[in-house]
Image (cartoon, rainbow, N blue to C red; front, top):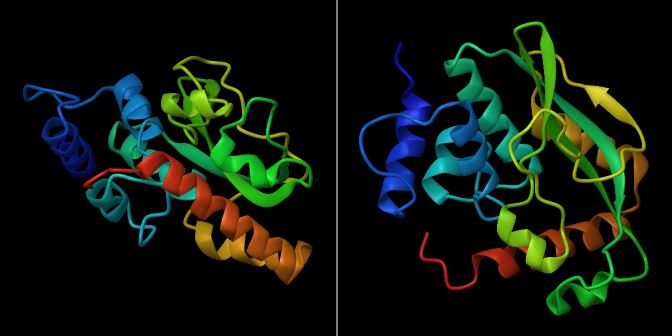
Length: 198
């Protein structure tokens, strides 16, 4: 079975000293490599773009994971949920401007449908994000969603994640709330990509 996306992910990891050899990443390693991509917006939603730019947010990371798991023969469903981001005590000083009033967002995560059991996957925050007070998951069956969901939707197969998310954001939030959200995402992106050559 060919796994073109896994091959691209493996090659990107080898270039960065994260993997070696010729064996493609298994189910666990796929999760860990995508989770540890720096949290920052890629220039597009195509899985190849996310791998090439070695960065992603909740939507692009989970779109990439869905495609990678499909290569492994594991079907999945992408979910979306509204949330309010409230930074914990001790969050990175670079994010201090977002303490107090919450930041709104529509969050994405993934559910794998494997061998009669569903596995919730949330690879939003890299392990490095723990230093900023943000939750990051280890591989396991009972992962924590990176937020407290308010409203939740399962996306239909083939449904465009970016279009769905944009529609829900515009339906539910003011332009001021959306600008605050964008500023927050940019700030977090700078925090996790500082000094990175790509």
